[in-house]
Image 1 (cartoon, rainbow over the protein chains, first blue to last red):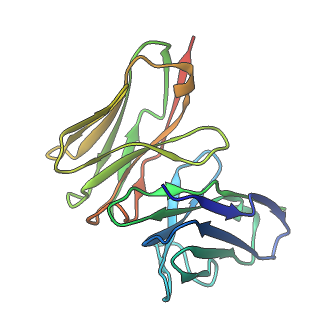
Image 2: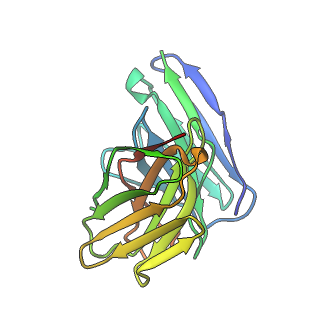
Length: 113
Length: 114
């Protein structure tokens, strides 16, 4: 399966600031997704990152808060904007190629003070 | 949209016993059902998956069964070992193919005791 690198692995941020998380894959993949996993909880899909076009957001998530870029088939970024303590979570990217299962990166553990 | 329920939320078994985790889904169009294992501080890892055209799939000590009529699927782990201790998530996908967005269950924390 593809090797997925996610950066940073963790960060502690101040309230009101923004953080950009990067997801790099070692091969071209059809689909890239961003999930949030709040402490002790399940995974919730934030959005599907579409190559060359705007991301598709799930209910409850908006572009102004979670802008996403996907300039090519191997890279995507998720920005968490104007952070508050409620944004403290693990953010995971996942990738899937046609006919292949989804696989996850190691995640970014984000804490907001 | 799709809704996936998972039970139990916690499960404790003795080493060597079997463990069963059950999930139900709401959207009859769902056709792909993966299971992920997440150890503490680690990424979710795919352990087994099943498509809607198959009723059962087995991989060594792990098996998954699917009942499309009842819209439920189950994970079976036999001869459990301490390294099976983790949180297990079921998921469902409503699109064709596997590279599609997943809706996850709430997770089951499995503890295998000696």
